[in-house]
Image (cartoon, rainbow, N blue to C red; front, top):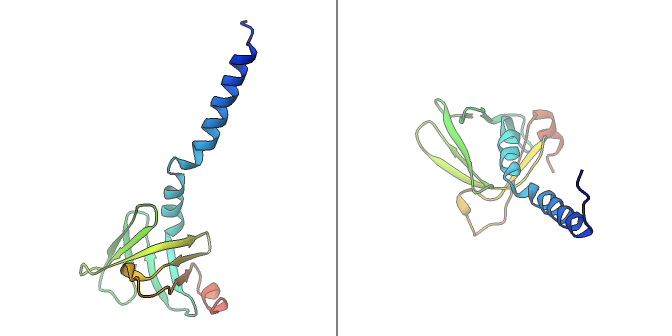
Length: 129
């Protein structure tokens, strides 16, 4: 077995620290957002279903005729496209297992309004804020 010199040990430690520091930057958050967005969503204050996101890239939007599509681009641009091709693009401000907060649709810079959706109707009504 080869003895490790102090310099070799420091190089190995530095390389390990670099790998650990860059691991969060490898795109895992993008995958998490895609995983977290799957499911049913209710607009804050309402117990009416707003839309359902499926893992195959399709969605059902309330009051729309058939299935639409969805995507996440640039890590925070969420696009919902309805059955007839009408799209809305939202900026994902925050997302977790219970809720998602979107910025204004279609990059409307004239407002700072956010829109919050919850996975359950109970949470949407409870957090009517």
